Amino acid sequence: MNAKIGDNSHELTPAEAKALYMHHFDKILRQTEVCKAENAIRQKLRKEAKADGIILSDIDFGLRCAQIEDPQIIIDEQHRRAEIGRFFAMPIGAQTELDFDRMPAVDRARVLGEAAGFASRNADTVPYDENSDQGRAWLEGWKDGNMRLAEDFETAHQKKSAARNDANTASDDGENDPEHDPDYDEPDEAA
Image (cartoon, rainbow, N blue to C red; front, side):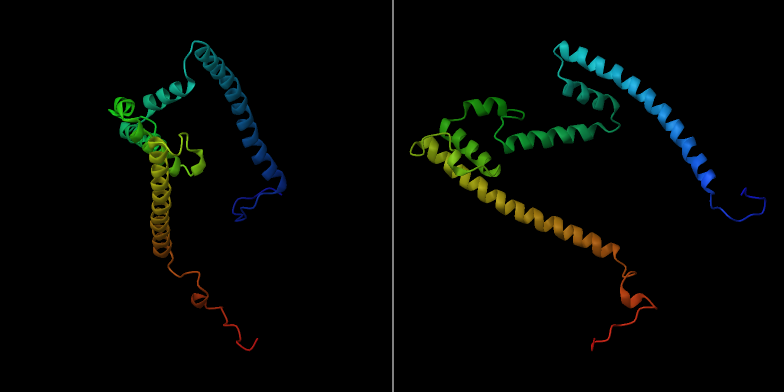
């Protein structure tokens, strides 16, 4: 049944729905084949770069840098990653590469223990003799890291939950509450 001029029906017949679907399917299929071919070339170029000793994640990072509109996004990301590295006692940061190696062994053991505590590793993973100064420092750091992890997680969780609740409360205008529905009947309490 073809639509006639003046016909207000916008429903498609099964044949029209099929034709519309196949129209879009064919265009997308052709473009998918183009993308596959282009991706094969891209993969070949990545293999060549890797064979030349290029780290592919550095290529990906460079592509992001070249295409980003706001460079501050990458600067902030690098700061966050450096901070995450420090969570794991990685000597990452402006001067920390040098400072970490010069740090006294007991202090370094404490930092490593704190990182292990923050990472929720088991206390029996202490890499030092537990009766040595480094072993005791590592365990103290582990206890502090583990305790701070629990405390900081709890406060972070509370803040995020409160923010979600605030957002949900702000967006809930009560429109879907039963008492706002004129057709809603209160259930009988005797039932």
